Structure formats: structure tokens, C-alpha cells
Image (cartoon, rainbow, N blue to C red):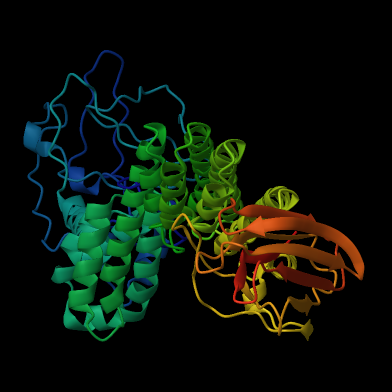
Length: 594
């Protein structure tokens, strides 16, 4: 069974459609009324409508039996429509029906027995001789398009309106739910729409905010990480974190703002470093790369770039320093290397270059100093050369060695010079030359020994010596000859005719001298008839003799070679013209010499 209103499948024996609520009228073969069955019109006659349109479909016996209170099928249909069916007016059999004669409702089809002929009504499309067109053996009412139709029942509105209302309410509810702040926030969080998240958070209730506190802690880390990875901009991320910090004061989000600020500064420094590196500003680039923090995803790249840029910068500094060294600008080169420590620190290569620079500067200084000193030496000015090296402001073993070398050369030269004086018996000159060398050579042992040697060979006045034998003739006075010439530092021999005609004195030079010098003079207070003879014995052998020395005679010079004699004896003998005559012989400047 099917409902003709909504098409729903109905169980056998149903009297009412459970879906649309319309009554279902069933027909029974043995209860069909004769007046309800339309007469078959004759050929050429117009079709006639049943006398009572509302009773066009007889009620089935089953439907009557199901009515517990014995109501008829028409009453069941009328009860379902909540209004009694009006009594039908009798009409002529062949009179055309009025428009109002059509039933207001379409009754459900009747299930007819196999022998039941189809029901014909005026205005329907079934022809008298046509077979039932439906396989389910139901008869359905059909209208011709050219005849006016009766208005259908609006009960379907009462069925559909709640459905539409429910659907509308559901749609509205879904729309309200979809546009709720929490749902918008959830979608914005999933889409990482920070601007929307920032706008939705203040619209949540306190309970909703409390429920999202722990989630926001995790989300704050996601915000920072996405900014770090370049998946979001700083402004929206910062504003969101600042809003989260304010809305969730107890969630430990206070440091998120400072972290993203530090991260932004780090990324700005990284970009600035790249720009500076491209522009060749190596120092600035290294400084900016050094500001990249470990939390920044650019940190490893920054560290790599620092090493690369440092290597380039170091090479640049080393090349610059070498160029200055080549120009002898050691101070400038040192300054360039030292200034690089701000970037390179205590770099081993820079420190090695500084040591190399210092050595190069020292080498240049020493070589220049030695060259200048050699110039002094070439001019024979050892003193100037040695003094120059000793006054050097830098210490170097080469200077010390050169000083020692110059001193040795100077000492050899001094000794050679002193030997020259000594060869000429100028021991005093030799000693003077040696004494002068003490200013540079100090208490040199060789010089001191030579001085002692030469001093031992100094001419020595016999008046300064004590005689080893004979008479001590050193009087210490000054003698005068007949011409009025004065003489000193000599030995005086006083002679008398009887008591002292000969006077002797002896000295022991101990082989230190080679000559004996002096001047023999007859003093002016001697007698005119006095004359004297002088003899000198060297190591017992007569080596010198002068006779006939008189008062009026010229002084006689003596330069006797004694050849390192051990003893020297001087003998003076006088001759007198009378017993009253006296004679005084004087050996002026009596000296042992070499």
C-alpha cells in the first residue's frame, strides 16, 4: 500500500498515513454500494459523476472492522479531516457536475479485486474501455489539464513547517556555533592567523580563558618558533604574545615577549651583518654576526660566517701589516695588528706576526746601528762606535757581540799604539795611550798589565832611586854653570885635592833599562884650574869615559846604552892645579831609560 499524498509505503490495514497524516480509505468487494459505483455511460453520452463525490471509493471491510467504536469508513475519513462531510445534494443523472462537486481531497486508491472493473468518474482521464494502468492494482485519480482542479489540502505545510523550522534552527545553531569566539579562535589557531587570535582572545569568557591557559603556553612557544623559522611576521607575533601575557598572567608567559624581542634583535643583527659583509665592512659584519643568539635559527650560519669573515679579515690585516713593514713603518704595522685583537682576540697567527714584526724592527734597528758604528770604526773612532752601541735603546746580543768585537779591536789598536811609543822609548806616551783606553775598556787585564810593564820602563831619575853602593850623591839642589845656566834632578860629586879626589856611586837597574842619560856640568863655583874625568861601569865593565871636563867648558851630554844591565857604577875623578882648588861635578837629569 502507498499513500497517494506523500507516496509513503503503508502497512496492510493502515487507515492513516503516519508520515503526512492523511486518512487511507480501503474498499471491500462485498460491501460496495451500487449507488457508489458509477454507471457506464452509453456511447456518445457525456460521463457522469457519482452522486456523492465524497463517497466515490467504497470503504473496505477491513477498515470498518478496525474502527473499534463502529464508525463507518466515511466517518473515519471525516474524523481525520476534523470536520463532518456535508450531505450531498441529489442531482440529475446526466447533469454536468459543478466545480464544487469535485471532492476537496484526493482519496487514496482502493485495492480492487481482480474481477472489479475500474471506476470511472467525470473529469478523469481513464476511458471506459481502458485497462488499469498501474501494476499495483490501485486506482489513482487523475485530472485532465483542461478542467479546473480543486485546491489541495495545506496539511503538508503543518508537516513540513516543523521540519523546515528544525532545519532552520539547526542551521542557525550551527552558524551561531561556527561564529562563536571560541570556534573562531580555534580555527585561527589552526590556521596560525595571529591577528584573528589576538582579536578573539578578549572575547572569551573567563572560564574559557582558564581552560585554554595551558594550551596557550604551548602555543606561545609555537608562535616564537614560527617567527624564528620565518613563517610569521614579528608585529603580529609580538602583539599576540603581549596579549597572551596580559590575559594569562599566571601561565609563565612573561618572558615570551622579551624572548621574541631578543630574537628580533638577533635576526636584525644577522641581516645587518650580511649587508656589511657584502659591502666589505668586515669588522662591522663580525660584530653583528656575534650578536646572533643561540636561540636564533641563524646561529649556526652566523658562527660559520664569523669564522669565514674572521679568516678573511685576518688575512687582510696580515697583508696590511706586511705592506707597512716593507715600508719600514713598524709602528704602523704593529698598530694594525694590535687593533685586530678587538675582533680576532689573541689569534695565534696575529701573535706570531707581532713577534715577527718585532724581530724585523729589531733587525732593522740593529743593522742600522751597526752600520753607523762601522762608519765610526772606519774613521778610527772606536770610542764613538762603542759608545753608540752601548747607548742603544734596544737590547740584542748582536750589539753586545759587536761591542766586544770593537773593544777587542780597539784594545789591539791601543796596544799597538803603545808599543809604538815604547819602541821609541816613549813609555810615558805608551802608558798615556793605555790609560786613555780605560774609558772604553775599563779595567782590562791586558791593558793593566801593559801599563805596569811600561811604567816599569819609565825613565827614572837616579835621584828617585837609592844607590846600591858607593856614595849617595843625590843632593836635591840646582846647579849653575859658568854661563849661568841652571840644572836640576841630578847627582852632585864634590871633589877635593887631598881628602876626596875620587867619588863613586852605584845603582841596580835590575835589567829594566837600556840606557843611562844625563848632562855632565862643572858647576860655576869650581876652581878654574880644576878639571875632571868621568867613568861609567856597566855590570863591572867600563862603558863610558869623559876626560878634561872644565869649568869653562860646555856641558857634555851622556846617552849610554846599558842593555838591561843589572848594575851601573859611576866614578868621577878630579885633578887640581893647587891644593886650594875645589871642584864640583854635576850629572844633571841623571836618568835610567829604555
